[in-house]
Length: 336
Image (cartoon, rainbow, N blue to C red; front, top):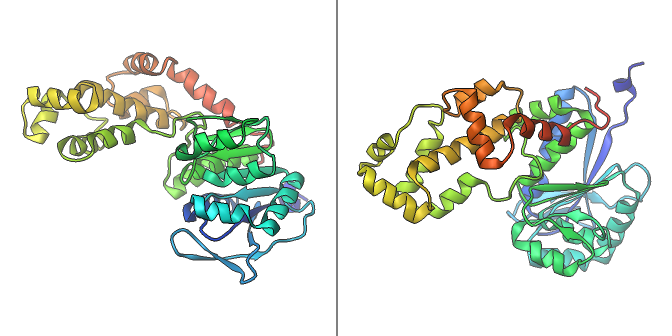
């Protein structure tokens, strides 16, 4: 009998409560369920539980989520997953003695523990963050560090793994973390298939900033012509674009474009284009593409020019960056 035929699905228990962030739940859950589809068998058994006797909780978006009662703790809980919520809802969950007692017992008996966003505070309340390197949403990082000084809170990471504890920055970074877990469990090939099916980044490694460069630039541009320019450029990164082309798109002079970019973004138009291209290349490097293909898709004349620009911007050669990613997402017990 094959190994896949006798494999027991890994149970993933989502501990839910009123006010839970809907995407913290739905994003990772969809990753695990899609992995079942890609592998053609149930390797993950996703279960939603709560202490609510009505058998449902109200999510942050107002959508009710059906839940099962909190089960007795035994070895069948493979992974405990704690999604986050706003401060008021989180405090209510922390004051729920039945829920917190179950979380403590489950966390101490599970093979793997994971949290999204402020769900890390629930782990902190039971002492699980002590002597661990963890992360949470950027808006809650200082609070988490103050409340749990024995932990080391990473200030700008998408997700962290320390032993059997996984924590993530929040919302969509929970998808990144779930993809990394699938990669660890069943190999990067399956995780890539899941990512492609869900139309998300192929992978974003946990060490990447919570603040992506394009989003940061868009926030600085705020509105108007530069925001329009960033969007226009992102759709044309592989093409031969000059500053003259950029100015013509906005119907302004090259001199005016330079002044607006320097004033608003603290960079020249050429630097803006280069930043967008190099950020895009970091995503492409996580797929099995030749450097010359990535260089072409990011608008570089050849691979050597791309490598030089990448090394200058990030302080590491593209090949070494890719290898670091592979090391981080290599399979622990890969069954593919």
